[in-house]
Length: 103
Image (cartoon, rainbow, N blue to C red; front, side):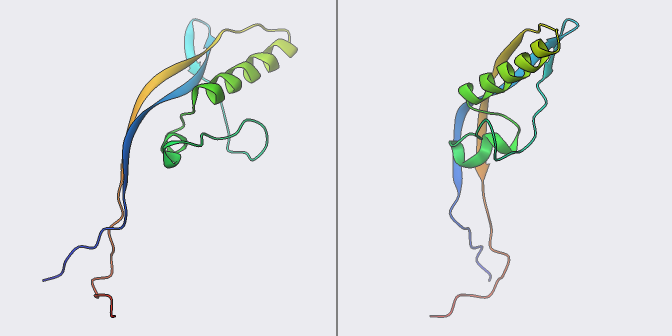
């Protein structure tokens, strides 16, 4: 009988945030793209927030204010906010090779 071999797992929950801006009375997500420049990605939760497009509060507000500043430079003033989410994650990895380790 083959035993399942699970690698170390990560499980937890945390608060994460989504940067938003008000567009014609509707709150929209601030567009972002992965980058090594500018505002850093969240450094907590083993990357779980990053995987689902969420951020720490400071990062979310920095992205929102950066978006507002760009709009302001174009002569438009917009409202921004960071919306709070309860993020729960359970990351697992199961070994696919059924062969036992040989000592």
